[in-house]
Length: 276
Ligand SMILES: [Zn+2]
Image (cartoon, rainbow, N blue to C red; front, side, top):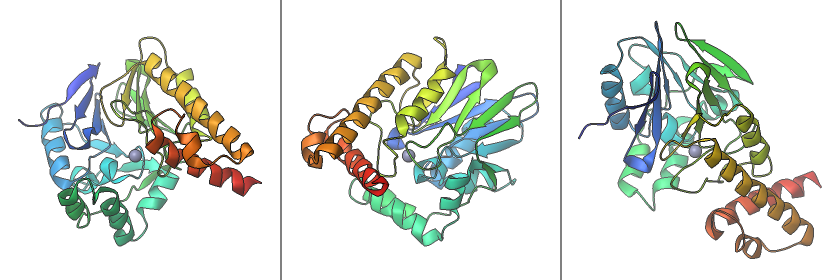
C-alpha cells in the first residue's frame, strides 16, 4: 500500500512511515505549502512527494527539524526539482555541510548492526544541505496562514528546530518528543533538554496536537510526562556526577531504560566535567 498522509488538524497532514516509524508533516496554505522532514532515503521521499502531490499542487519549501539522516536524506528528492528552499537551524545546517563521506559514515554506523541493507543505501545517499538557516525564530508565509520555525533550545541535538502552526494549534517537535520509543541521546544535551521542552510546553494548550519525530501524534499531557522523565534524568546525572557514581549504577534506576539512560548519563557527566 502506498504511503498516505493523515490530516491531524486543519490542512496539516502527517505521513507516518513504516521505516523507523519516522514522521513527515505537510502544511498547506492558500499559496504555498511546507514539508517538515523528508525521510531517510530517496525511495521514502519519492513516496512522500507522490502522497503530498495528491493533496496539493502548491509550491513548497522544506524544513529539517535536525541533522539526523532519517529527517533529511530525502531532501534532494523533495527539494531538488523544482528547487525549493530548505530551512534548518544554523547548527543543523553546519553539520549537513560537512563532507558528504562524513555524513554518510555517521548514518551507516548508526544503522549497520540493526538495518544492514538500509545502512548500505545510506552510504550512497545524496546529501542536500539546507540553504535557509534559523538562529532563534523565522516565519514562513504560506498564504492566509504562517508556520513559525523556532529553536526552543538544545536537546536532542545541538540544532533542534520545531515548527508551530498557530492557527491549527499544532507543534511539530522533531525528536525533542518521541512516541513509541524512548528519546535518543547520542548527540543530545541531557542537561538542557528539560528546559527546552518546558519552553515548548508554554506554547501548548489542552487541545494542541504535537507531532513527534517518531510515532503517533500526542498531546500536551504526553509532552508534560516526557518532561518529567527528562527532569528526573537530569537530576540523576547531576547527583551521580557529584557523588562520583558509575554510569551503569545510575542508569539502572533512570527513566527510559538503562541502555538509553547510560548514553545520556555519559554525555551529561562529560559536560559537567568540562564545566568544572
Ligand atoms: Zn534524531
